Length: 98
Image 1 (cartoon, helix red, strand yellow):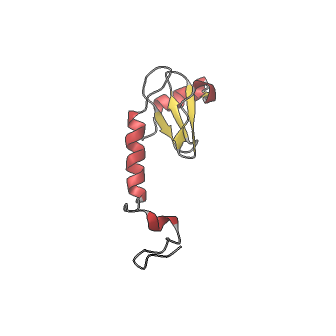
Image 2: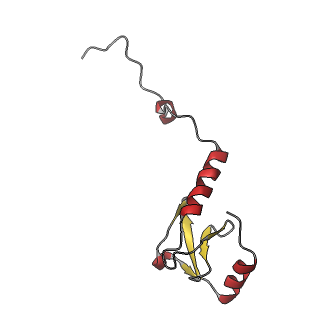
Image 3: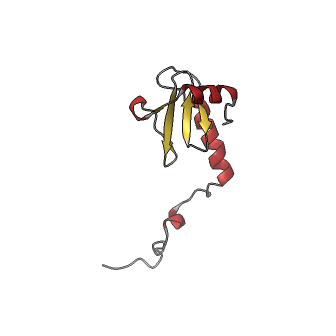
């Protein structure tokens, strides 16, 4: 096998293969916020609010908390945690900002 003298050597790291600009943390937050604005509760089709401390999306109407695993919302009713009445009241009073 002969090598092409004009061929570039293979990159050492995966980032060298990317032709796109690196994603800034502020861009990620903006994309996350946009995605969260588009998501709705699969049970009620209602609004979701983000609980950053618990890493969950909250549906007060369905009394469910959907987990976010590895940055991906798991929007399955079977995977959601049931909210207590006290939690629902707290979320109604203090809806977290997306």
